[in-house]
Amino acid sequence: MESVATGSKGLNEFQAEIAILSKVRHRHLVALLGYCINGNERLLVYEYMPQGTLTQHLFDWRENGCAPLTWKQRIAIALDVARGVEYLHSLAQQSFIHRDLKPSNILLGDDMRAKVADFGLVKNAPDGKYSVETKLAGTFGYLAPEYAGIFGLFLFIFFPDYNCLYVTTIQYIF
Image (cartoon, rainbow, N blue to C red):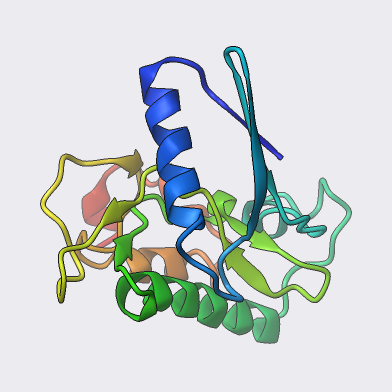
């Protein structure tokens, strides 16, 4: 379950997430089970992903008492995320751009299979295009895939167990 911020920005993200998730179904996208609006409180109810976020397994595994991800798990997760994004970009009936792909928006099931979550910043992609002209949106360091090389940056964090956001300037990453 996710509680969504109040205010016009929170309402817009809430409505966007409901609109997107009601149109897409894929084994690598988290499923929206329902939502609730009670006054200023807005809740989204998702399928339960018992292993939590990818962030917990990449950066906080010691604190959470988890084993580090194996190479096989890392590759499977990367492929799951790529398949989810591919579905959004080109296989869904309508194409979408996620715009906030990052480890905390990747959820893991009991079998450590990954699903892309958090669709509040998603934009419709014009037919036949995999990018949209837009103001920058998303979390710094994990901008949308239409910004050059961001999926490569996303993959970069899998291998050295290093959080790229600690780098002080972007030129050190690319």
